[in-house]
Length: 384
Figure 1 (cartoon, rainbow, N blue to C red):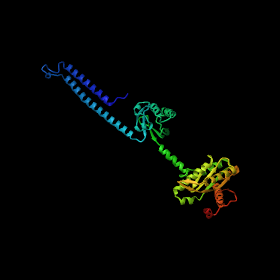
Figure 2: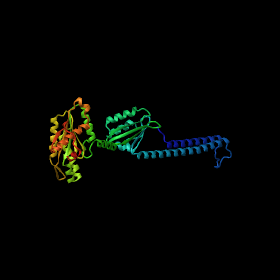
Figure 3: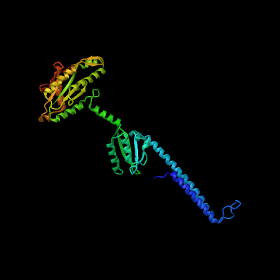
Figure 4: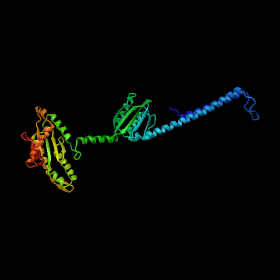
């Protein structure tokens, strides 16, 4: 049990008064006569020992008052220091919990209580850390199984250990760091990193997806074609190029052009299977990966459906927009003896040659790649 300096100062003051009183009584006894004469005046003679005792009492009284004052000043300074520490803790952006070597709570700050929705009146210095963690679970800030795991970790932690972990809580994700305290025990900080995690996930998503249509981009398509090659199963790579998109984009405005690209994306995804990948390569060019075992009939049927779907008029902002598409299909016979010779860039190039053939032969059709197809001159390719 801790005793405040103010309480100690009061006890010292009473001890000093008691000691001084005892010395005065002793002095009177030594004098062998009353200290005052009958007429109220000081007795004529006081033995030297009595004088010494009285002087000692005065010295003790003086020293006691100095000691009492010093203790009270120390208590006031300690109280001010505690108040300043609490203000500092309460102005932290992180939640903070200080614990001692007995796994008891020394102090918590306002941010910690706010993060976990804990009633401040239920937290007190000296309460077991396990009880504090249980309050977090009762407030709904964390699942009970997480609370049980955290309690076990806190109670079995090696003295002087430090670490960092991410912990789910009601509002998202917390970054929890714990460090040993110089006087023993440990200090835990709790930082809400939900927004940072969301931003990281968005960056990771945009690294592999088109920012406009939210479809996989060229990088993710490459990864998935590589994975399809590794399966050893047949698959198809298709390139889809929109017919007359540039005319529609120039006739209206770029905002409507963006809306048209998003609508095209939706229709392509509706035609293809969930296991397939629809990607945007840039501009008005899309790609499709038909994975799983894929036959020529499967690819032929899906390509025809995409052409029919994109040939239907689009209704955008009260405008009726008519486009179409041409498709080049590369059906990949993924035999084990060809695995080492297959690569994503080659397969996309072959699909591009098939697309060029489809556009040469009248658009709104699809063509399969054939080994006899050669590369078209660059000028002719751009005119197509």
